[in-house]
Length: 96
Image (tube, rainbow, N blue to C red; front, side, top):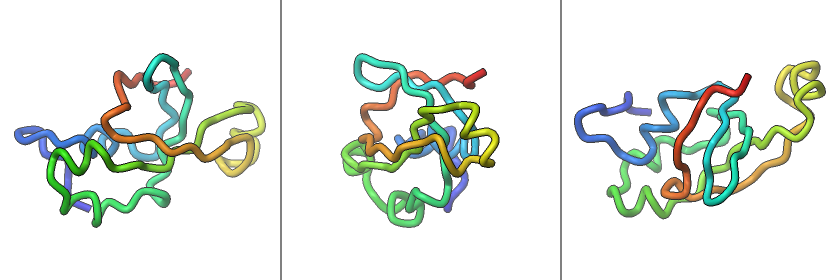
């Protein structure tokens, strides 16, 4: 995985900055609370794509359904996998 490029910002760089975090993500018309699991994203493949190809690429995020269960299970339960195109990811903020 390449480091995020802040000069030539690519769609995947937004995800790289918050790896391993639980984030509120604006996606289309809804806000999703998701865990950014680095084990479920193929950064080597995505890093070799053009900007347009990255926008169309679907990543797997862990959507947090039950926050208490998610925390108690150390990020293994209380989630569902969702696929989201990188171009559909809007503003992100830390979930509290």
